[in-house]
Length: 295
Ligand code: NAD
Image (tube, rainbow, N blue to C red; front, side, top):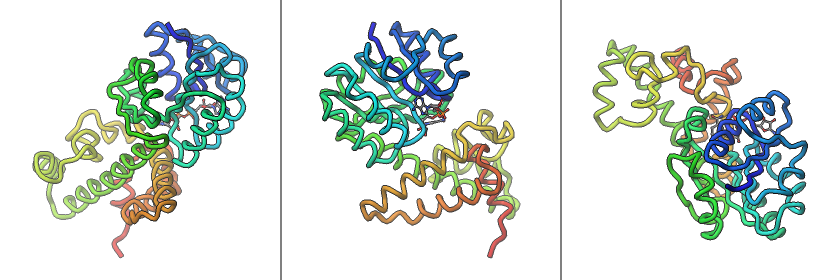
């Protein structure tokens, strides 16, 4: 049994912490929202009043927070009071520059650290099947792996500090672009008189095959579990897709990488969200594209 401080018990953090409790760890939890702390308590997490109090007793510190500024502010406030040699695992999705800064704070305070963002959403967090993309030294990765295991379906060491975040935003840029591509194909098919099922039957076994089509099909019918069959309830909300596309564009600008489709996908998700769809599943963009007029 390891004592683990878990900071950020929201939609993702709470089910992840529950899986650590189920695996036999002692989990000390912190959040700003009383209702999230109630859920954590019910899941067997020992609730603490402050991050400082939680980390004082913990060999492992996990953060699952909204953005880079939250992670850096928490790291700055607790790094000095953490046990020397403790391992900090940040599983939030944040910008690569903040992730690298968080590693620097940890290193300056004699701590090990990994950035370990996840893919798999709230369902994967509950089922303990998240994919973790991990950046950090071999020593930190080796120590992190058995801790991540009860929350994970797959754990990939992506290399240097910050590379977990790099993998996450590159993956989600593919996802944002591919969902728009699949959605455009279905809206074109509709206008050409081709049924959803016929296009699905062909493309799902042809060169157009991809996750956005076969697992998360944006039209109702072909894939029973996709949010299209559940009034586009998330799933993965459009606001989170926009966040990840913005991170990809920030990273692309910082290194001078050309990502024209990523940039356009970001603009389309921005317009989709601004039209009142921030809480809609990101695959709902098909309805927005269908309603757009061809110029
Ligand atoms: P959330 O808003 O539900 O949870 C974040 C939690 O952090 C909140 O409960 C908030 O009260 C808490 N918090 C903020 N500042 C804090 C502080 N200083 N101290 C303690 N607690 C603090 O968000 P979420 O959906 O759980 O997402 C968390 C992270 O995971 C984000 O970076 C998100 O991009 C990423 N992510 C989310 C999903 C998803 O499907 N929701 C999937 C993959 C990755």
